[in-house]
Length: 245
Length: 227
Length: 53
Image: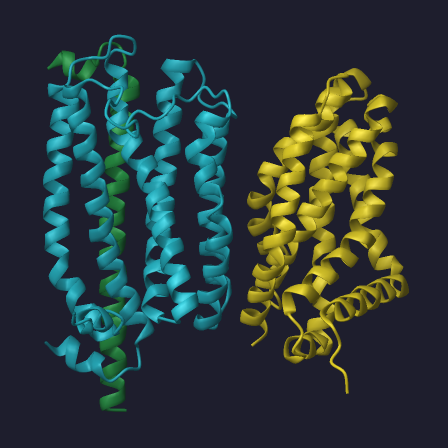
């Protein structure tokens, strides 16, 4: 098997071009899926028996919570690759991902709080899942702050990578918190194998939104990655020829 | 010439740090005083009713211990980094993680242990019954150990940075939050006369996790920061 | 239409959530593109300086 295509991904000029080519393949489907999911969730899905129309918030809350964890996991994997194999591009991916993940963690917390008010009667409760999601936001800001405080790019990348990996412990805590503790937040709906505990016509918009959000993250990551590559490769020769295209 | 064994090297690092700490015991006493001051802030701010203070005693003790530990943990690598000893440790051929473990243990002996011994006094000031003292000390002993470990990672990452202390807090406090939750809960349970076994066991598990994984992480961070 | 806006009395909660989501989604796109454009400008300027100092 010829692995050249894989090795070439670590080369910044190649990655810069590939990112541009891939972008529409993630961007447009993301837009379409999110539009379809919104229509399915807001218009087509029937109102919930217990929560009425308020349950529709799940169509932005659950995908953003999913992204908040998925992006962190991606960031951690990229950080590990950068540390172990010393691939600069991996660090660029981690750097590009952090602000995206932080924004979705914020969105998850905010939509969760707004949903909590009519459902639980309170904007906030310090239960295990909400608290660990808040800790996740702090972890993101910590990684971003650390990277910003170190002038030497190499040291900044590697320090932020170590921190990201140390914080990865939080992810299983967030996910399993609803099983390990009696929390107010409801347990997982989707990861039950075979029979998710959500009705079909409520479920498909949710799955569509999850996929849409994930593709959206990939698209934004590609844009930010291109910006990162430009910043990092400022003095490289290939830049002038590339930008002149 | 015989190579120094890992254990001997670790003991050397431990004894050296203890010796240095005792020479500057003023520096070492600062986190302790800070602990007492922060704990005092709460009765002043919230009112002197012991019954009310008792309800928040667990949390207050832990927050004060957290902040005091943060203050103290900067001493871990700063002096060695400044005078070049850290570089010597890194090129010495000894496993850096073991040296970090030894230094961390020395740091806990000098910063964490006195805090644990002072805690019952402070707890009494917050209205905690003497029966809870055992749990208070155990909870804070485990907790300050965890904080020393996490603090080692944090101070290794922020070595030599301007405004590193603020950044250190930003990095270490979120990591310490789970320990804070269980540690404070343990003390609260003990104050109300219930068994604190559950949270204490969880805290012990966290300590074991931190003591095993933090030294290698801190060693990696040191190499990154000091190169 | 009123039904949709009302969301069974929950309108005041549901719509702000979706508005927030729209803002976050929009912000990500705008911020990423601005970052890229700025980096591009910077790189082009540097390349011009290198060529004709």
